Amino acid sequence: MRTANISRKTNETDIKIKLTLDGTGSSDINTGIGFFDHMLTSFARHGNFDLSIAARGDLIVDEHHLIEDTGIVLGQVIAMALGDKAGISRFGEARIPMDEALAEVTLDLGGRSYLMLSAGFGSPRVGEFNTQMVKHFFESLAENAKMNLHATVHGENDHHMIEALFKAFAYALRRAVMIDGVGVKSTKGVL
Image (cartoon, rainbow, N blue to C red; front, top):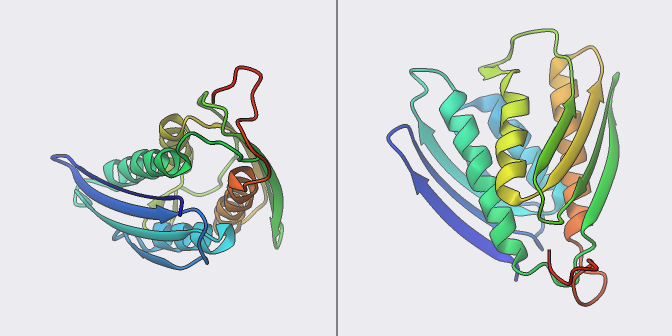
C-alpha cells in the first residue's frame, strides 16, 4: 500500500493528513471551510485516493494560513506515499468540463516543482473560500510534492471553474501515480 500520514503543527494551524494512493475514493475531510472541504472530497473521489484531513487554523484571521498549510502537507504526503517513484507513469493529464467551465491539468512527478496556472475568477469568494487562494494552494502543493503542474480553467461560474480544476487535478494525478512498469522513468535513473 502506498500510504503516508503526516502531521504539521504551527502557531497558526494544526494539520493531519493521511493519504492512500491506491484507494477507493473514500474521504473524511474537515478544514472548517465548507467549499474547501467539498473540493478536497471531490479530489479524493475522482482520484480514487483514500484521504483523511483534519485541519484547524486561525480562521478568525482569515483562511489563508489553513489553506496554504493544507497544500503544504498534502504535497508532502503525496511525495511520501510515492516513495522512490519506481514504476509510476510519472506524467498525467486531464480535461474536465463542468457545465460552462473547462479545466485542463498536465503534471509531471519528475522531482522539479513549478506551477503555471491560468485562471481568472470573477468574484472574490465562493462561500467562505477566497478565490485568490486557489493559486496559493496549488503552489504550496506543487512545491512540496516536487511536482511540475500546469493548469488552465475557463468559464463564467467560479464554483464550476474551481471544481473542474480540482477534478482535473485528481484525474491527472491518478494517471501519473499509476504503476505501469518497473524502474524509474528517467534517463537519470532517479526522480
